[in-house]
Amino acid sequence: MTPAPIRILRRAIPDHGPWPDAVAPALQRVYAARGVRTPEEGELKLARLLPPDALGQVDRAAALLAEVIAGNGHIVVVGDFDCDGATGTAVAVRGLRLLGATRVSYQVPHRVTHGYGLSPALVEDLAAVAPDLVLTVDSGIACHAGIAAAKARGWQVLVTDHHLPGDALPPADVIVNPNLAGDAFPSKALAGVGVVFYLLLALRRHLRAGGAFEGQGPDLSCLLDLVAVGTVADLVPLDYNNRLLVSAGLKRLRNGQCQPGLRALAELAGRDLAQLTAGDIGFGLAPRLNAAGRLEDMALGIECLLCDDTARAHELASVLDRINGERKELQQQMVDEAEALVATVPLDAGALPAALCLFDPAWHPGVVGLVASRLKDRMHRPVFAFAPAEPGSEELKGSARSIPGLHIRDALAAVDARHPGLVGRFGGHAMAAGLSLPAAHFERFRDALQREVAAMLTPEQLQSELHSDGELGVDELGRPLAEQLRLAGPWGQGFPEPVFDGVFKVLQARPVASRHLKLSLLPEQGGAPLSAIQFGGWTGAPMPARIHAAYQLDLDDWGGRRGIQLLVRHWLPA
Image 1 (tube, rainbow, N blue to C red):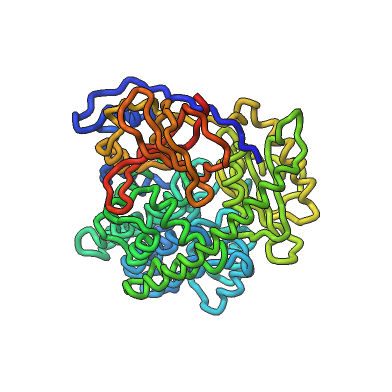
Image 2: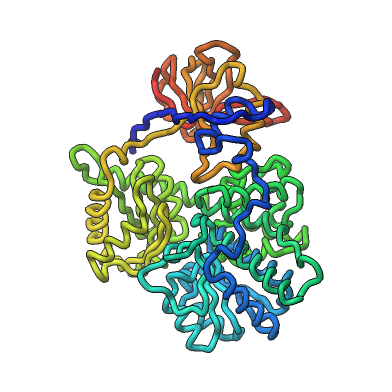
């Protein structure tokens, strides 16, 4: 499979104010390109967090929770089977207990047994525990049938979610979601874990006003490590408010003030807590939590996050680590099969369709999102990957990933409007979505989706671009700048990690672990040779003598050395 061609483009660097001399000029340029032009704009103090009263319905939700807690009612937290849902569930359970709730339990749907969110099947299973109130986390806005079933049993339902609502809202008692029409909350980018954290802030304020505490009440900042992990893992844009949450959570993690389960996951991922970054969360901790929901039961991940016993937390994290290893093997197999499927897709005027729809009856529904993500990156077009809901099922579960310029949930809504009954349930964000589909509808859906996406995207938007923060001088290619960049974020979705570019002479190129490309590069403007690696970059083809490379400047502390290396993102012959 030939990846989409990539152009390396340099970001415009706007004028920016004076920074302290301690902030490297390269970092000043990076900040300015992301809209941070002064030290004040870059200051991440938790006191600047948006207040909870700006979030619609949060006061009603807090009053409802306070009433249930005062009556010693049973609150059941219903999460989701991804990392955002798991951390959000742990935040809700821990936070409610801190705020005086004595009867709090949780239930997470099983991907195969229950389907997504608060479904009728999950409501049936919850009947045995007889909740007085069901609190959904990172789900609920699309769970019309399940919420109606819960209400029919006399339960109260409080929805906290961040996914985009459909045309009609479910019949919950209260819905807290910054993306509801008319909600004035300035940050629409909260993850599910962020929404429930805000609900806890509002509940504490409500209880404090009612005289439940002496002083300010419990310190909820002890939950910010979980908030940071869920926010980074869900790939929501890191606007200023989310960066405040993630930065505060990272500080707790680096100081060792974190849940035992997160400490154990970091250890098993080979990450140093004292130097932990958002990237370490995204590539180290989050995949191990997500693996439980993808292949087995996310209850295992939630139990790890709720466990206060260090030894037990490590045991649970070790199981998650093992499952993640199995996930990686399965994912690679499915990606290889997906690439083979792409090679069979008919071309239109020499190009692939504007969107790819892939299905294999042997694929696992818990891994199709990762397949879609990997192929989206390689082919630079929206990708939908489908698997049977369970072996032999006539229902397909699909996961979609999009590219800048296409709101993937809007594309699904357009297909649904033009072809009623073609799609089952669907929901999601601008960049990711999930859906169900009868297997017999797959080809009709594929054709309808490709027509819709082709009308929404221009040829220019299907041209892959890699944005660089410019060239580094020889004196900047060192450890001081690498250390500043590592801890200067948090970097992530909407606030991308710094990438630089330049021309290098290739002194050496060899494979590492069969898939990766290890390089020794000499900057064309002089200086010393630099170690570099491109993960997944080995093709066996000879390298040119000179390359134009886009790269990240990273620390290289392997084996006790204190050096740097370039993480090559892309290169072109120079």
